Image (cartoon, rainbow, N blue to C red; front, side):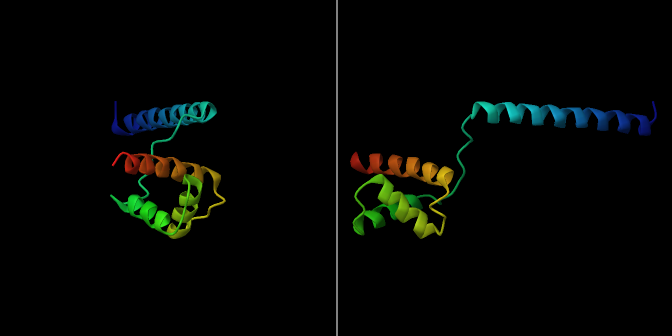
Length: 99
């Protein structure tokens, strides 16, 4: 088998694999599997922002999340991002409460 034929064969295999991957990703989206957490904060940065929000008078996780979103310059109307940050804020406030 010459190299040209082998290259053509491998390109076909790659194309099929890409199509299969797209189908798998579409199936995951249908079932709305949670995406892996993105790294949005450096180590300790969110905790500092939570403490800052508490010093400013934020009373609950929603207010703290609003503060964090504003401090980071993010759009608080982005519901998906807001929900993600709120879960992270909840984790931090739970950790603080155990101290």
